[in-house]
Image: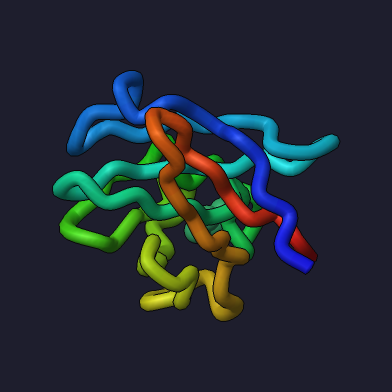
Length: 105
Ligand code: FES
């Protein structure tokens, strides 16, 4: 069963911006607005726990600020070493002015 929770409002996350929210107990999610579409991944690098939302975003690729692993924010796929595992990603939907993320495990 999907479990959508509100993480932000559309008008507080402009294109090119990102935020980190604690969507569940200890689950920090980075939410990105790229060109008016929203994407969400866990804010936790699978290499060594780096804070992904603090990294550089190039297109849809986020670079971990710790050791430079790269991930696709659209699907969590790992794109480069030193990480070898994908990062969890989350389905996002917009209802009115609310951004909701499906945190179902
Ligand atoms: S913690 Fe992200 S690349 Fe090492």
